[in-house]
Length: 175
Image 1 (cartoon, rainbow, N blue to C red):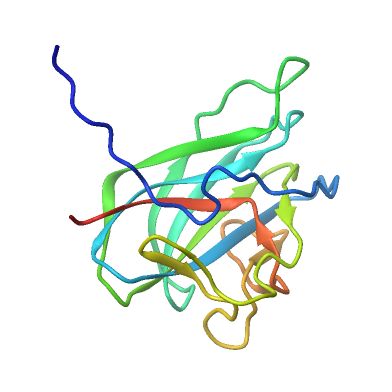
Image 2: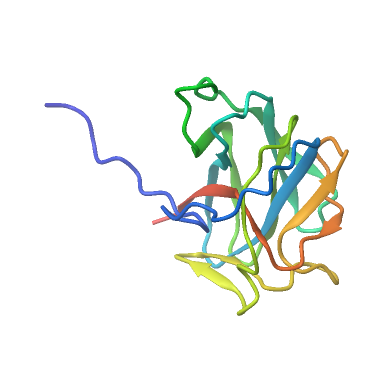
């Protein structure tokens, strides 16, 4: 029989995809800031991919000041093209990123050719809580949630105005 029970990862978006495609083909890095209420592991990142997207993507996990890169990975994605569909694409970190309760991290994904999705005003009503992770309405400093950087390679510098960009994490809380 073998095998075990597959782990259940926590994420901000869960199974719900972002709702809006802006038809933006510019090089951009998008991110989400999160707080943890329990110790655990960030095992990966994910982004919502447009069906026509054939660009490269990679993810970085930063500390709460958005200054120090901790992990870097390249996404292996399904081929784009006529048969492609918009869907979540996953990348898994090796080794995993350890986090402690109360810690803040920023998950960034670089989009070489745009093709990104978002949910407008996702954080307008306040923090978004999913299990033991929280995406605060107002991120560190004066930024509203949803960070971005146009023409930036893996660096988010702009205020996302509370939009929920289609960037997420895969978190495994410590039992």
